[in-house]
Image (cartoon, rainbow over all chains, first blue to last red; front, side, top):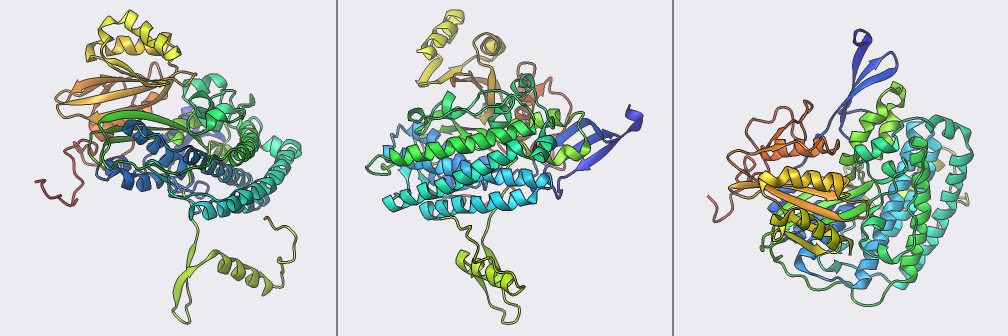
Length: 404
Length: 156
């Protein structure tokens, strides 16, 4: 066997994977016979840096661990700090944090669906879902001031209140995105190309998922009904009615189904949060120094269980901050999923655990004739796009596809 | 309460843990265990008390010792943090990969960032530091400073 196998390095920089990871695949013909994963290219020493900064500074640093699950990380961290400090945060703050958490899940799962479409050559799905995702990001921007890295959390509560008009707008967007998600569910369950391309690809049996410690949709699609929101309730999840979405399919198709079902649960959770939004203040005063102690916090991020451990030493800086992001737990399952599969399935198998991609928007333009440079805001960017297409004889402004 | 029962059962089996076990809040148990008893207690939790998930492993530089914290969870969301200490002069632990296959990557973090020797860790790629990282440089040790970092007032 080994006489005929060759090693194919994939990464750390690879066009199909938008973040650095290195996979050394042994292949015999087109079949993958062995996998060796090298991680760490993105190690930025954040845990060490946290020890040198105050708790408040750490919130903003930790929020930047990931460009997608930024609220997941900052909430997981802050929950641990608040537990050590013995702070009870106001109910309204709990609900606002929950609201942002589920909006984050919406945009993350929509992003994933688009990436999955892209990896199997279905770029129309990418265009559709990423446009829907924009409407969720707009809501987050209106709510927090930022599309990602929302900066909503602070020790003792949240930094911004929310008004009735914003809540109403959220419901409008949720209604629209839910309609479109129903269409994607119909697409995923009836379109034979999707079903056949994803079924039986990247199989992870229930036994392997348990043995390798898989988390999130990756575990749930292998029939493991694990969800921190249900098993170890935090924020407002103990008071909300929702189901843990699972599938027994154990392949990439199962992971797609689970995420689509989770989107539907998130719409329901957001409606419940909006309907039951308590009145009152959004934060309590927090001390700069946190008494000595330790806490372990868990959070169901869109990609799975996020674990933070914080140890305080009585000063205004933590003694130790430990972060275990969901992708680290899931990458050990990827090697299993790739074994005996075709080399061509590699991108979609890796993408199917939804490894964390960093993303950001806003662009800086430079006019080469005038030398003027500056930021282009969203409206200007949109106008520029419409004009650019008009100049080529295409006018999209009359299409009645607008989301609220 | 399920947590109380778990604690009572553990104390029933290991009476010496009576004063080093605490329930911080619902679903959060913390146990400090002497090094020589660690493997017994760990095996007990992992194989007979329902702690079937390994959330992660945390290593902390605590001066003369290193604290190693194993965060184990049950399917019902109860997390037990089992802490043991090893001497800085001889920082050695045994791998728990035979109980949790997923432990390997967390143990490699202990090796790279704190310089802890993990017996029984299979050969493989290092994690998370680069391949050309200098020897004997362990960033998460408290006395380690990045090269060129500003020295704070009061520090040498």
